[in-house]
Image (tube, rainbow, N blue to C red; front, side, top):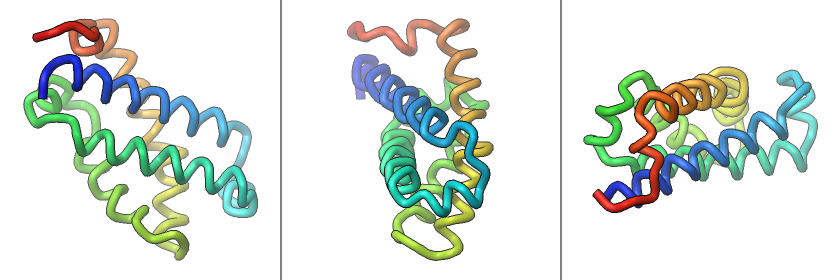
Length: 122
């Protein structure tokens, strides 16, 4: 995978993460579980985000070691079901912890390693 594809994936990860935090803003776990439309949209973005993180190459992951790549892989597996307590717990963990941490580190990397985010050839 070339640098353009990696930067596109990182942009998608960032956009989906921002959508998740925007949709879930002000909601506690119970509110999120009860809100069928918001919950469904958050899940859609989380699944897209998780698939995108899995697609990032190992070499690009090594350039961003603080991101919880394994956490995203595990979350992707947990989100394969539509319902169930595992999905609900994974959903809330992602919203309250994994997504905010990912966005924070992406911001740090964007400042410190801007070349990772540029849409230019290798």
